[in-house]
Amino acid sequence: MASGQKIPVRMTAIAISEPGGPRVLKPETRDVPLPGPGEILIKVHAAGVNRPDVQQRKGAYPPPPGASDLPGLEVSGEVAALGDEISRWRLGDRVCALTPGGGYAEYVKVHTGSVLPLPAGFTHTEAAAVPENYFTVWHNMFERGGLKKGETLLVHGGSSGIGTTAIQLASAFGAYVITTAGSKDKCDACLKLGADRAINYREEDFVKAVKDATEGKGANVILDMVGGDYVQRNYEAAAVEGRIVQIAVQAGAVASADFSKIMVKRLTHTGSTLRPRTVEFKAAIAAALEAQVWPLLGTRKVAPVMDMIYPLTDAWRAHERMEEGEHIGKIVLDVG
Ligand SMILES: NC(=O)c1ccc[n+]([C@@H]2O[C@H](COP(=O)([O-])OP(=O)(O)OC[C@H]3O[C@@H](n4cnc5c(N)ncnc54)[C@H](OP(=O)(O)O)[C@@H]3O)[C@@H](O)[C@H]2O)c1
Image (cartoon, rainbow, N blue to C red; front, side):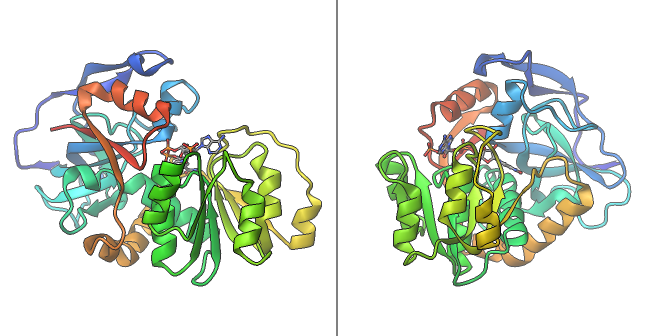
């Protein structure tokens, strides 16, 4: 292992002391992890907060085998040590990374394929808000959903970290973007980000609104994090040959639906979770993002929407804010 600066043996991390509410997130002293072959150690400056962290804290989303038990799926910081077989990165490089866990800490080890340079001109807090949402949206909206220029996207939860990313990327790549959100302020924020139509789902039926906005054709791709009764309604809002991509089931994993719609409209209903995928799979997404999205981040054609920043030791407040549901965009932890 190669390291430039003196790396401490112990570090502060935020652990889940037991499954439960935000207050179970407690600072602990842990060993600094040692990077193995193909891994680097990052001195973390900022860590992104994501809804799956909340699920993990509640005990509903256990880390995959071999991953850290600490929460935190994305970070930015500096390369502090190199494991064997690392050619791309140098000590001191400013990077951001997708992590399989362990991001709420002063140091985290990450596979080299999940690491990207800081986008040009980005602060660490901004860069920490990028990986989880951009990897997820890139794969599900473009690779799995096959969204193309000129097609219509419907993305639910438009003001979420995922939603704000999907709106900007779909719009930057030439799609017509329809989104749903739960208040006027959230809808306004989505329109500012480039959505062509924002539907307040508490006041309007999104199926009718999508049909009205598309001359009755429906959406070619639907990115859904809701599930439950949205399954049937997505089938109704989808265009012929539409692709529905499930990335979460916040309103319920069990639904009853009229499957004849799948046959009649020749729909595809698919989905995925990012965290347990292989390092090779994540490296392929990282390469695509660096080639096609990093230039857009560098010119700020797309950028993470920053909601609030909290110190690492106040991670519980960050979770409280996320669960209150008032946030628009990303909540980030400042690790120092
Ligand atoms: N599959 C994957 O690989 C993957 C990866 C990352 C994240 N995710 C999932 O993607 C979702 C968004 O993550 P995030 O970190 O961006 O979270 P977030 O910012 O907390 O957003 C959650 C969003 O869900 C919406 N929502 C919740 N319940 C709803 C309901 N019953 N009806 C309509 N909308 C509802 C909320 O919209 P309103 O406030 O407008 O109601 C909110 O915008 C989470 O469910 C997360 O688990 C999946």
